Image (cartoon, rainbow, N blue to C red; front, side, top):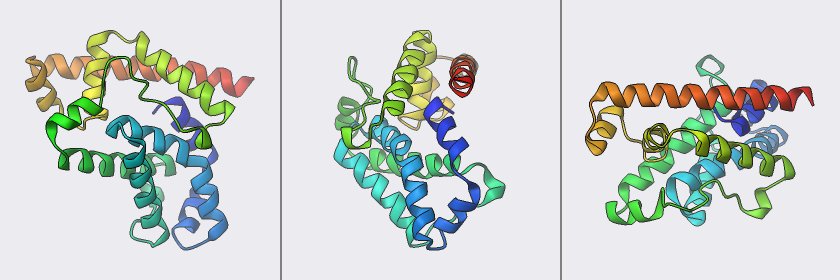
Length: 196
């Protein structure tokens, strides 16, 4: 879980997430305020389009409001639940689009995939975005590539192995080491942020 998601996880009360799914306006607004930046950034990173990312975000929150999806405390934190919903929707949309077009709009060298529209961005979001980008840049290219294929294109380890022409064990090792390094860096940042 990245730092922005950790921050959201620490601020979203599971009871508020449950109340939001039951039609409580105040809880719904609180849930939106505390999670929309993280979810928009994730959808944007996967889809490469602000319009499509905004559509996905709207679909997720409309489903919560209409009680089409419900938060279950036993299945993890509210932010993990929201990230899973958003990621699944974005990947479904990505897979439904033209594969060549998909490749051109995602994971393009030199593109800031963590960009957040100004109306969603706060000073805290800017700091978190910087830390996340720096942490990803500091990973070995092989680890970063495996993580991006898994989390932003939704590929399974076997699919990554095929795409990169690598043994499955090598892909699993890259994913595990990369995620471990990300977790360690972001945990350090999170601890510093909490003590400040």
